[in-house]
Image 1 (tube, helix red, strand yellow):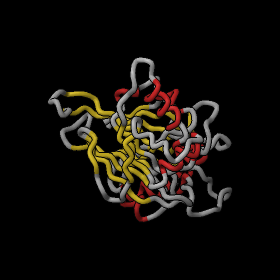
Image 2 (tube, one colour; image 1 turned 90 degrees about the vertical axis):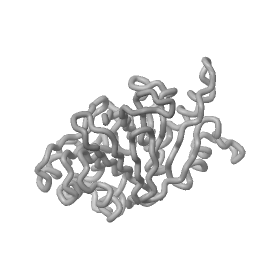
Image 3 (tube, helix red, strand yellow; image 1 turned 180 degrees about the vertical axis):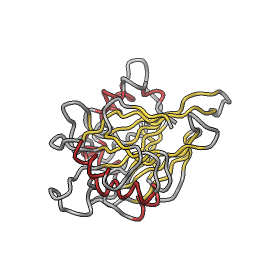
Length: 264
């Protein structure tokens, strides 16, 4: 599998990156028996739709997984809707879209459309259910309950490794504090993409975000092989949460950057 950062700024788009959006791809056999690359996007925050076009033709998008309905993680679904419905070469087919119960209503709200607008020609909505796995080509995707002020999920994706015959795994926390669901999701993954919006001693509110230290604690306890910190806000130097995480996690560690890729 391959992970590409489309955007990684926390809470808003930043001066060097769009807000949260991540592309996961894996080679596998389609229903027609032909090998191809399957593509899943997790979150579509502000500015990410345009950056996604640098990496993927939306026609080739197989699934969209939304962690929660705060605007910095889903507002560019409006752009995806416009691109799919009004493309001058012809409308694109609906794409599987997994997320919180309120996702359709939230999209209607930010797009300013009435309840009669179902977006059924652009998105096939499916509510995320913790522990209920679904397949996208060779990838198995499982939602896990996160801890955030709104209904929120993290996603664990397992698929073919780029380097070995055994399966590879990655997990994305979305926005969360430490909780049982996210701990279970992270267990033993090859790569943990963990948000680190808060800083120790500065941001004391619990039940909303991880700090770098708590992300490091999560990675160490879960036995992950690589930790990538993301959702770092524009006013925070990424070196700060990285240093916090390094105090508890001794494995490979870095902050996400737009365009960065990892093959696992």
